[in-house]
Image 1 (tube, helix red, strand yellow):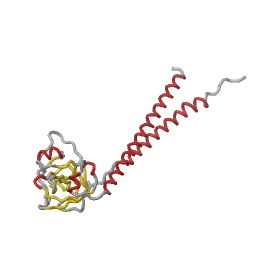
Image 2 (image 1 turned 90 degrees about the vertical axis):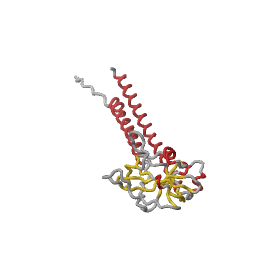
Image 3 (image 1 turned 45 degrees about the vertical axis):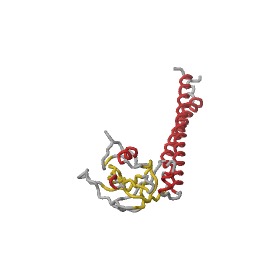
Image 4 (image 1 turned 180 degrees about the vertical axis):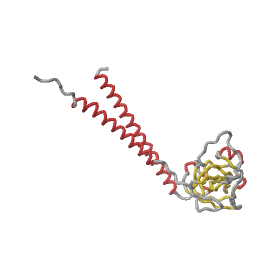
Length: 244
């Protein structure tokens, strides 16, 4: 391979590497901007007026209310309580307790009531959770259902299960469930902890990745300039022929 062809191939490879790493860096910055916008939207939702049951049921798109505070009045459907297994709070594994709350308008909303430890000796044992009868007032924030965990085989339908699919749960219970849940907040009560982790969108991670890609792009450019330009044109081999 002659020198000109080798130089052309090296130049092409360097330009391609610089273009790719710059594009990846810009993509990471765009992802960071998207998540910052999402964080701003979440903060805005949290600052809105507290929803009541009537406003929640009247919403055309309840999912647009996610993260907004709510104060709902209704009655627990205690026989439909579900315990989601393998859920963590404070680095401990236990259950998320989910109970439907029937609102005055007839609609029901599943409430993420809190966390309880599980009995690892008797894995079929249900923890004691106080579920008051009569009219109750529950404060929290509108939230999507808990994230789904890997579940081999057929999804469970008993009191203890890995995940909760709202459509399946509605068919099972016959309750007119809303497409969102209420994540109950406040101090521990009824045998439940409510130390919900703050949502971390990982914005700093994207900035870190972006600067890594930009740094790699700069490194490729510097190496190319030094070995492909500076040494090629300014560090030519000296004429070693002897002069008489």
